[in-house]
Length: 269
Image (cartoon, rainbow, N blue to C red):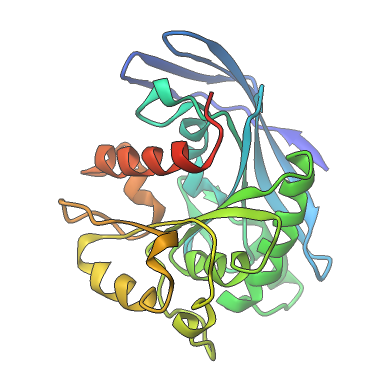
């Protein structure tokens, strides 16, 4: 099921104008104009529960990202981030062409005025909504995103508890090319995540708030450092992917580090 989103949001920075209107966007950079079609869709989870998601379709699309939110949040966590991924964040010259899918996992609530519809359905059905219960939602969304990406591996992005799930799921999933995680931790009951991911052998971008860095390093201590790009912010920073939000202090340096990693591991031209 699909329905159009009607959004009006105006952002100005580094010579880039982004205007949402009537469910479509035109992004203007110094050298090109691209279109993002934004739709709210539903797709079935592994147990049949409908997952609500915002699908940001870029034309032309060079890459695909699955965006997963933090605890207590919804797909609204990525209303600002998803369009930036389409054209390179704060570095338009590094045009990345990411279509993306921002999902509501069944463990969450509301952010930026967007209610978590998947969590609402799960509660209405009496289904459990702990962090691990959302694992099947992310797995189903990976399958969907992979198909939309012409059966090519995708970027998996996680925030807080979903960052932990992204590492757990993504390490052995051939449909995932690389993983970006914001503030991962030992949040999953009954699982020693540090041990579970010790054999991880694909590119990982990881960052967090400054005071979380020691625990992040501890979590990743068993992973071959060859695969890890750890960004340690100079500012205090923020928990989860909201560190990328325009309103958050230090967002520019987070984006700069993220963009450098993206250009290394994904086609950007």
